[in-house]
Figure 1 (cartoon, rainbow, N blue to C red):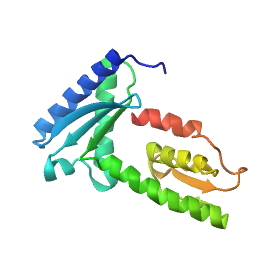
Figure 2: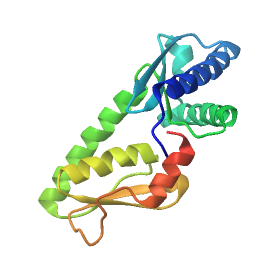
Figure 3: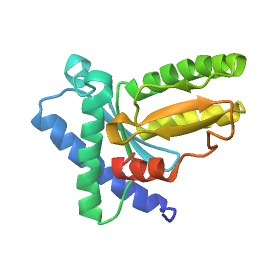
Figure 4: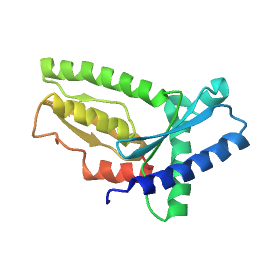
Length: 179
C-alpha cells in the first residue's frame, strides 16, 4: 500500500469522525471525540464520557474492536480504498497495550531463563505484533498458530520454530481488521 498524503489522511479522519459522532449521538453516549495521527494511523478517541462511553469497550475490548471494524468498513466503502484506523475510549488501548507488554516482558524473561517456549491466550493481530516486536528486540523468536479468533502467539528461544517477523497470515488478518 502506498503512503497516503496528509490531505488524504485528514479526509479519512474526518469521514471516520463523522461516522463515529453519528453513532455516539444515536446511541446517546457522552464524550468528546479527539482525532490524531499516530504512525500513519488515524486515532479517534472518545474521552470523558464516563460510564456510557466505557460501555463501548466491552469485555476485553470486544465491543471496541467491533465498532472499529464497522467504522473502518463504512470509511472504506465511502472512499473505495482501505484505511488504517484505531478507535479508543479513555485510553483503554494504551492501558491494555501497557499491560500486554508488561506481561510479555515477564514471559520473555522466563523463556530466556528456562528455555521453555510459552503460548499466549488468543489475541488480535495488533496485540500479537506488539509481542512479536518485543520478542525480536530481546533476541527471541515468535510465531502465531491457530485461526481467526483463536490465533495465539508462541515465544521460543529456538530459531528453528520461530520467525522474527509477523507471518503473512497475521499481516493479512491485520489489514482485514482495519487496524
